[in-house]
Image (cartoon, rainbow, N blue to C red):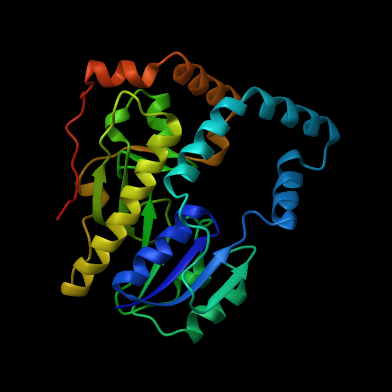
Length: 277
C-alpha cells in the first residue's frame, strides 16, 4: 500500500515513519516543525498574549512543573532513543499541517491512504482530499472513553482511570477524535511505570495499531470502522482544560506514588470495549 504521512518532527513520529516504510511504500511525509525557534516563539507569544506579566507567570509555572515535564520527555525520548530522523522519502516541512503547501504536496505525491499522527487538528483543506482507503488518525487515548488532548494519558491519571490508558486508530472527520474506529487497545501497566513510560507505551501501542490498521484496510477496503456512538459516550478534553492547577494536581499524585497504588488496587471499574480485530 502507498502511504503518505502527516506528522510532526518528534522522535515517536520519526520512528513511525521508519516502521511504516518497513511494510509499505511511504511516498511522502509532511511534518510540522514543532522545535524550530520560530515555531516555539510564535506559540509562546500567543500563549502569553504578548503580555510581559504573563511571561513571568509562565516561567514560574514551568519551574513548578519541571518534574512532570521532565518525566514526560525522558520517558518518550528513552523509548525512542534509536530514532533521530525520518525515513528518506519526499518530505515537506511546514509550520502548520493545514497550510496550502501541505495540500499541494499531498496532491502531487501519489498515495492510497493518508496517516495522521501528532499534528494540529486537520482541517477542511486536507479533509477534502479523498484517498482510495481514506484518512486515518492515531490518537493516544482509548476512544470513545477519552478523546481530545493534549494527552489522554494525563487525563486518565487525573481521573484515576489508568485502565483507559491506550490508543486508537480511527478514520478522521471534522470532529475531535470522533471518527469511526479501525482499531483500539489499552497498554499493560506495571507498578514501576512513570508518567513518561506510560505515555511512551500509549504512543508505541498507537504506532503498532497503525501498522495493523494498514494491513486490515488493505485486506478489506470496504471496512468503514466502528461508530464510536455505538460503543458509549466519554470525555472530550480541550487544550484549555489543561491548566496549571490540574498539571500540578497530577504531578503531586505521581510524586506520591499514585500510579503504583492504582496498579496494586487493580482498579477495573469499567467494562471497556476495544476494537482489536
